[in-house]
Image 1 (cartoon, rainbow, N blue to C red):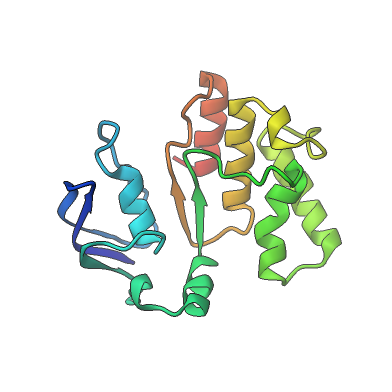
Image 2: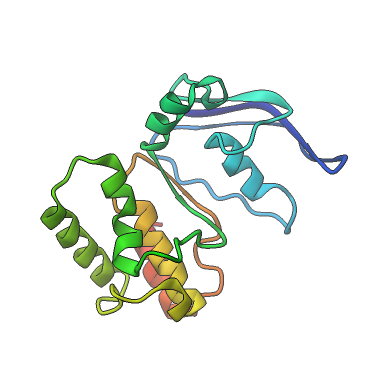
Length: 182
């Protein structure tokens, strides 16, 4: 369960989040809708411990990520997958290595198992032949699907999708939404 309790955040003297509170029960799909600059991405970054709130707190299964040591926070983040709005792909890694990155960071699987999972994921997102390519060789829609694959490859119990279908055509959007299980 994720609890957001009275979160307030200022940027450049402007209150972006004002006393925001909500609870997300396990198994819930929740969508945040609002205009650009309303704080949707910011609230996700606060929940994940990437940005500190100015006031309030977040609890993930009773643990406040903003009070953890760097090692404890890294352990918590292994339970979270996040699809970033701007893709956040590593430009020095090819597509397969970008998708495999979280699995390698976790350090629990052999390379042959990682390779099988990456190949399977590339097929699921409809890009089975691009594993050798680099992010600068991909369209925006392809980058979105690769970053989606990286976010879900470990099957974490908590996944945040920051505008998962932005810039995608209707057919590709439908594929991504079906993978999310909406």
